[in-house]
Each structure stands twice: as structure tokens, then as C-alpha cells.
Image (cartoon, rainbow, N blue to C red; front, side):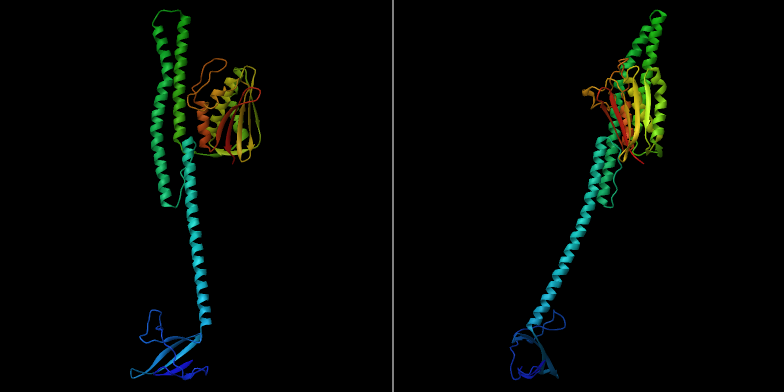
Length: 376
């Protein structure tokens, strides 16, 4: 501490060394806040110390000065500590902002990835629900995708089914028309009965095409399962085999079930229909005296139904098309084709349950159809 007279000469120095000196007051500053500036110089650096003084007034006139001094080393140390505190908090703030930015971007990226998977599932014809997100932009984008999907699917369904129905019904109608015209002529009763049987068969074919088309259209329009229940895979396999066993016996083909313990969730009617379609397909392609085996069991986190036969198998050129609508191969015994909608129905049912359907040739002859579904 020190005191000066009106002219700035030191009259008291607590250190006892600067009495009589006049400090070089060349700097302005001080005040209670940093923005204040005195009109009188009151800061000086003397002997590596920072000196600061304040005026002593009497009646408005300056009669002297009092002040304090502090070594610059302690000031530098304080500045250094303040600087490091500033660096620390700035780094912490930057790290926090980086973490928040990463978290936000990660959530957005995950939402976009879910949206991408949904779009690819829609492209592949698999069942998928539009992802939800708290981000308003992502949610709006998902809704726009879903609305676009509904609009495009509705238009494509109407156009595709109209064209397909017209194409598939054309041949049976031509056969019915030709047989009806011939019935107007005189002919033996035996031949007349043959033409009537042809008309009935072609009418039944048209009815089957329409029924299958309506069923397939209804499945494709559904986005979720209606009423699901926990099912026993072995019981479901036996139930499906029981439906086709009578017709298989008439064709000289035996149906055997090999099932292990496994459970799954789904609609019983749809899953049974899928298995019945696979079994009927296998029976129709099996030779007389052959055997169709339906195996059911758990494989990893999925329940797998496999239908195997020892028929002629699937030609290589048809392996990639067997699940297409209206694509059918001639049956070995009758050379007649089916509606070509059975396997398409199987695939739609599999996708609706979050599963997959496949068909491949077996080593040594025959085909192997598999229906893979999530386990309960």
C-alpha cells in the first residue's frame, strides 16, 4: 500500500522503499466495472509491480492519492488461470455441442435408414409399416411415402388385374363359345356330353381364376394381420395335410408329416391355406406311387415348413418365375396348367407374416418348397 501527495510524490510506502519517488502514471483504467475509465491516469508499472491509485478529494479538489501494488507475476498467474478456465469451459461447451450434434444426427440417420428399409420392402412387395419418428420432417416424409405407395398401388392393382383377368379369361371363354356353337348342331349324345363337360370345366376354371384374383387382391391390399394367435407348428402341418390327403390318395400319392416342437404367431386360416397350396402343388407334380413330405420345425429364430416331393422338379428357366402371378407349368399327368396364382398367394401370405417363401430343386430329383416365418 502507498499514499501520494497532490503532485504524485510518494509520502507513505508499506514496503518502505519508494518514499519520495514519483510514479509514472501513464495508463488510464480502473473503475468498478471494466467499461469505466477515469479521466485521470491512475495505473502504472513500477519495479515489475502493477500499481493502481485513487484520488483523495476535499471540496472537489484533489489533495492526494492512495493506492495498492501487486507483483506482475501474480497478475500473470491469475490471467493464466482465467485463460485455462476459459479454455476448459470452451472445450467442454464444444464437446457438449458435438455430443448433442452427434446424437441428433444419429437419430436422423437411424430414421432415414428405417425409411429406406421400408421403401425397399415396398419395392420388393413385402409387408412393412411406415416408420415413426419424433422429427417432424422425417414423419412428414414417411407419410408422403405411404400416401404415394397407396396411390401407386391402387392404380397399378386396377390396371394389372384388369389386364390379367382379360387375358386369362379369354381362352376359357373362347372354348365355351366354341362348344356352345357346336351344341346347336345335331350330334351323338356321347359327343354332346363331352362338349357340356368342357363347358363346365372352363366355367369352373374362370370361377377359380376370379376367386383367386379376389383373394390375392385382398391380401395385397392388407398391410397388417387382422387377428393373430399363437399356433403350434406340428398341429398346423397336420391340419393342412388332412385337407389334401384325400385328393392325394386318389392320385396315388401319399402325404407324410414330420414335425418338431415349434410355435409361431399368425392367422391360422392364411397359414393353413399357404401350406395347402404348397402340398397341392407337390401332389400334382408327383408321379403315382410317390410321396410328399411336409416337415415343420424351428431353425434359429424362425419356424420353417418344408414341402418336398420326388416329381420332375422345376426347369431352370422357370425357377425365377414360379412366384409370379399367372405363371404356371403343365402338370406331368394331364399337361394342364393351373391358374398360376397358388404360389403367388403363398408368397403374399409369407410377406404378410414377415416371412419368406422359396422353391428350389432337390438333389436326385424333385422340388423343395419352404415357408419361413418368425418364431413366437
